[in-house]
Amino acid sequence: MRIAISADGPSLDTKVGERFGTSKYLLIVDLETGEVDTVVNPGAESLSHSGIQAVITVISKMPDVLLTGYLSPTAEKHLTANGIRVVRVTGGSASKALERFNQNLVQENTGLRNEPARPAGTFPDRLIHTIKSSAGQFAKALPVMMSVVLLLGLFQAFAGRDTIASFFSGQGLWDTFRGAFAGSLLAGNPITSYIIGGELLAQGASLYAVTSFLVAWVTVGLIQLPAEIDALGMRFALIRNGLSFIASLCIAGVTVAACRTFFGGCP
Image 1 (spheres, one colour):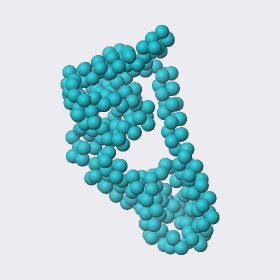
Image 2 (image 1 turned 90 degrees about the horizontal axis):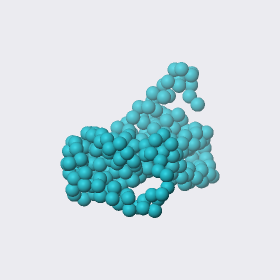
Image 3 (image 1 turned 60 degrees about the horizontal axis):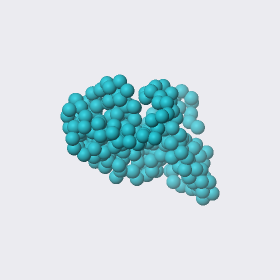
Image 4 (image 1 turned 120 degrees about the horizontal axis):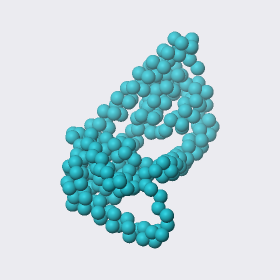
């Protein structure tokens, strides 16, 4: 089993970090070998107190458990979605926190001591962990995909070619802005965006509009902006969403130009 600990210093003797995102170090402890890997938290000095770098760093190290002080609900959601158990620790050194966790772990597994133990961190363990994590994320995405199918049915029933034509003016610049704006209202995953984008093309929308819609759909999320501000900080969230919106406009223009240059036209 691998344990990640957010800490103020590079060793187990240092104090557990009070806040996950601003802890200077992450200590990765392998309980099987006793090895400790010290990792500098790249987001510790961030002016916006962003925890996203710490989240990415922890996930990349693939621990089973994270021992930490306070962390935002959004950060915890991303960690648990990747199969990482989060345990909050208040005060004390990293070694004491690890000791308390081991004691609780022994108590939890008292009834399982007679079962043969499989070494932690082996390939089968990692494979099972990955499969469970992927299955969990698919289960979470399934309701969204079903809702998209239902929405497409309503879309086809109430929004015909005339409605699409009235929303998209046929002018490349305005269609690009309108497509990016529509995609920015909600945040989605690429699979659902492809379905909706294909339907828009079939209904007569221009490639400008569809391309900007697809990019904004997966990169800009105004409805999720409050949660992103809470997890990443206001400045980072606003700059990221603003740049993503601008990028959707630029990518739409480049895509149409490339289609005309290399394929002689657009779909």
